[in-house]
Image 1: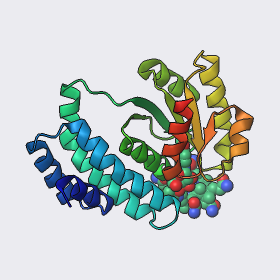
Image 2: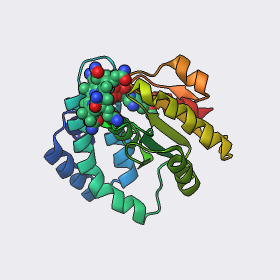
Image 3: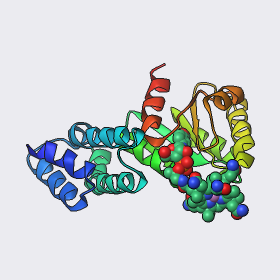
Image 4: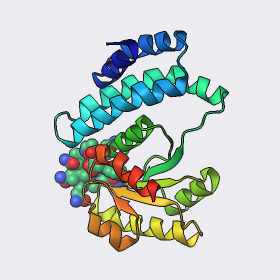
Length: 210
Ligand code: B1M
């Protein structure tokens, strides 16, 4: 295995020390930061997402892999910013108003970062007008809404309506969370639904390709 492949494996296995060391080695070898992201880190997170989707790994393994990726990104992000390299897509994500659950939302944010999306995380209990303000500020391609309570599902509807009423008709809105379904997404005018953090990457890419 070469260093790039070793880095992919290190992230997949959640080995943060190796992830940092190998990232340094690849930079020393002259690899561009974006190449490291695209050719070593993103493939690792794609495997992690797939394994999570199929139930081969669970939340702890996914968090550990994401943490290893973060260690590598700590070295790469400043170099990419300096070189003016921006992620292809920007996403704003948050848990809707009234809802404090953030573990699933954080996993989705991590997977999107792993797919090289720029992610603005608004946190939990986010009212519709904060989503609208964030769309104005960051001009994202994608909004991610998470809800874990049946009682906060209506806040998703209000948020989608607020974004559209503010005139942002082309930004894609992807929703998810335990009580959410494809049917509910359609009903409230969201563009898509993903059942888990692994498929949220494919779901987002599918929406953004249209
Ligand atoms: Co709460 N809680 N909780 N809770 N809690 C649930 C959700 C509940 C199902 C437990 C139960 O009764 N069996 C229940 C909801 C019932 C319902 O509405 N149908 C419930 C309740 C009732 C409550 C309170 C009201 C309890 C109370 O105070 N009486 C209260 C509400 C507080 C509030 O939000 N206002 C409450 C509080 C809490 C804690 C704060 C203690 C804690 C949250 C801590 C935190 O998040 N930082 C908590 C927890 C931990 C849970 C359970 C146990 C676990 C949730 C979790 O993190 N799962 C949960 C029961 C359960 O699920 N077994 C429960 C792991 C996580 C990885 O999964 O979040 O589903 P999940 O995310 C998945 C997918 O849903 C999807 O991808 C993720 C990864 O695969 N996904 C998306 C999520 N967001 C997505 C967005 C996308 C795409 C996919 O695109 C943008």
